Image (cartoon, rainbow, N blue to C red; front, side):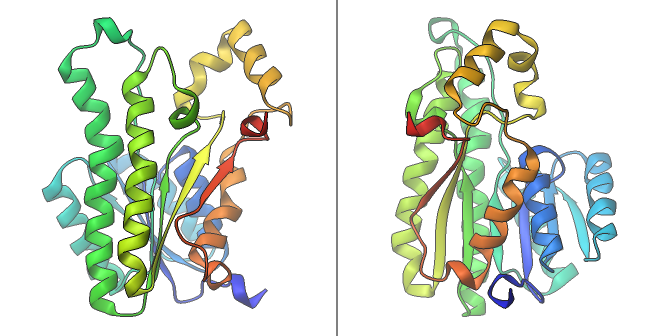
Length: 253
């Protein structure tokens, strides 16, 4: 399967130390890519890096708050020092919150928007600048959410941020195509991660998820390994501006 090989490839995965991001990182590592994980917690980064190295690749963990411009600049420099190049970005770092719209203060709004939207802007700009300088094209994929389509009554700032990510990706896809840089979107449905533990533990909420998901199960981190490899590889060489829904069929209904 040579077209899916990532030998010699370097990927950056933000929020790659757990959940969906770690699933992506595992897939990239299995395909031969070297991986730089950008995430805030050094200890969790170290655990993820050891796992990736155990899969037979090189990996580094870089402490980074993606909403902090100086952190992103330093993370890019650390990645270049470790690997000398970058070929793909998976802008996956995200956060959420449960609060009624009429009770939300501006600090809570800013907290989610700064990570989920500004963080994608900052990381994709840094990687795009490096890809342009390298002159060999590349791939970027942004993690959105089906919440961008359906809306969440208790997390309006999360839905708003993910909707904005869709449009940011499409705009970047058009602009960066002239440099051979592809930009795509990964939209998860209901996935078994720390972010969804409350929903999973609530009987009625869990039943509602199962009823709306045709495959009748929660998604897992492993379900994101293949899409990451595909989008990073030359197999997706003519794919840009596209949205991939990893949702067990939920959005088909």
